[in-house]
Amino acid sequence: MKTKTQDHVKFILSEYAEQFITLAGQYDGTVHSCLELERVIDQYSAFITNEANQEVWEEIHRDESGDMNQLAADLRRHSARCVGIMEKYRALKLLGGNAEMTDYFQNIESCIEEEFGGFRLTAESKVLMIGSGAFPMTPLFIAKRTGAAVVGIDIDEEAIKLGRRVVDKLGSGLPITLAKVYVENLEYTKEATHIIFSSTVESKYDLLRQLHPITNEEVVVAMRYGDRLKSLFNYPMKAVDAHKWRLAEVLLRPDHVFDIALYTKAPSGGSYDEQL
Ligand SMILES: C[S@@+](CC[C@H](N)C(=O)[O-])C[C@H]1O[C@@H](n2cnc3c(N)ncnc32)[C@H](O)[C@@H]1O
Image 1: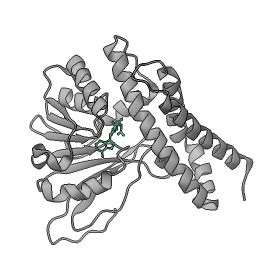
Image 2: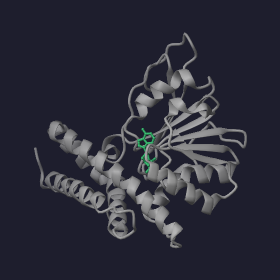
Image 3: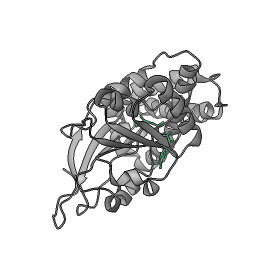
Image 4: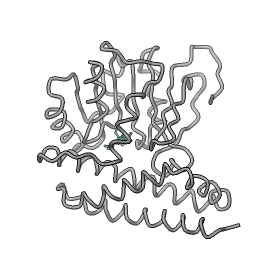
């Protein structure tokens, strides 16, 4: 049975979808509309990680999954676009001499430390990040902390250009390369020991499939994802071909906007369950 709380949550979610569309449309390559976007994304992050909203979301989803699936898909797409723009704002502000941090970024940055769970990074690691964004905080953090080489790729030319300037400013001399290139055309893919997928890359599981024949046998893949309520802000986990990839570890972080699934290659001839 529908309750007032369910109606209220549905109303809030529809409002977020509207706001994301408006805010994305206001991006003009300057920081003019950044405060409002940051405010809405911070609120949305808090909404997504609130346990009470999780329960209401489950109830709504049970009752009317058809409508909700469409709203969830819209929210995911619009919020992903806005997160990309927020990284651009952050880059523009840093390059303009103003670098404060919003709650969303604090949330993300506190995740990076645990990214590979038991599969530690060392100075010899070769990391590939797919969807490095305009403010490449993961490449910067990894290169600074571990000394590992990091290549970040992105489909957005503006994100790559801003990202390079951010790296020059915050991590000059660090072994970080950013490029607008497809993973299958990147020589480095073969050498990568660790690969990270941004959570907001829609095609991440298609790309994981493509990566299998062009990566080495020891590679570890960190797939950022969000299921249930978090799927309103992230592309969710999908089953993988058990003859190709093995789900080795899942890092669930209730207070964070996304969780992380770690995949390694399935030994050839082996047979594994698709999910842990
Ligand atoms: C803004 S970052 C978000 C990073 C965030 N920390 C996360 O984990 O989702 C996501 C970036 O992924 C990029 N992106 C989306 N689809 C992609 C793809 N298929 N290949 C490479 N980059 C992609 C976007 O252009 C965007 O800059």
